[in-house]
Amino acid sequence: MERSLTLSPDPIDEPALVAARRMTGGMGAAVYFSGVVRRSEDAQPIAAIEYECFRPMAEHQFHKLFDEVERRWPVESVRLVHRLGVVRVNEPSLWVEVTAPHRGEAFAACQWLIDEMKRVVPIWKKPIA
Amino acid sequence: MTVRIQFWSYFKELTGCAQASEELPPGATLGDLTARLHARFPKLAAMEKSTLIAVGVEYQGREHVLKDGDEVSLFPPVQGG
Image (tube, rainbow over all chains, first blue to last red; front, side, top):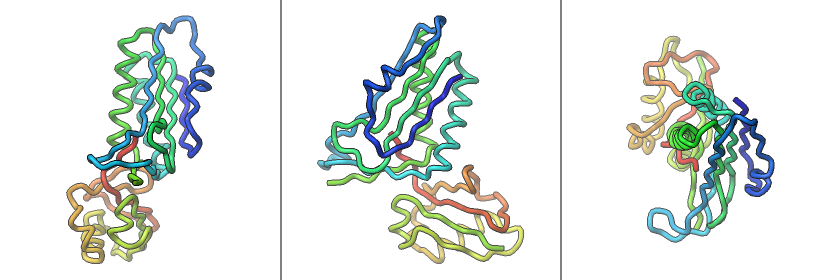
């Protein structure tokens, strides 16, 4: 399974990510999710979220999750970008793409990966008013 | 033995520091370390049930036996995405 992980303070360039997609002929599904910073957190208005990351552990935990995706589904590739530092409202903080032969496994793997990321990957957010 | 401790997210505010170290007897566990830290940083004790602990880059439970030079991280529930 091809895998790509980017943890960076740089803005997420969705058009460039989509343009860089590579799929072999057997793949029939490309699912991607973009997580965007909302204008409120715990019912309070905010201007941005600051993301903090314990990078060595985050990278290790992400790769363990990718290993598990590979074990569970016939996924050809996973690409995941998580932005760090200050991300303003309406800007994406997370971008995840899964390619697979069929939509069922692509949706399932993408959903599972995001759910597990929120459980085990050491990234924290701090609202900025 | 000496272990180094890193605090993440708002645990840095609760303890007033990002890093600390503790001297522990051989065979000490993470449970022994957290008891020591809760006495040293009382605000951390209130977060005990939701505290996550890693040694190096792996999560570990309170029964985990520490080694000299271990790097232990304590943090609240993660919130990526």
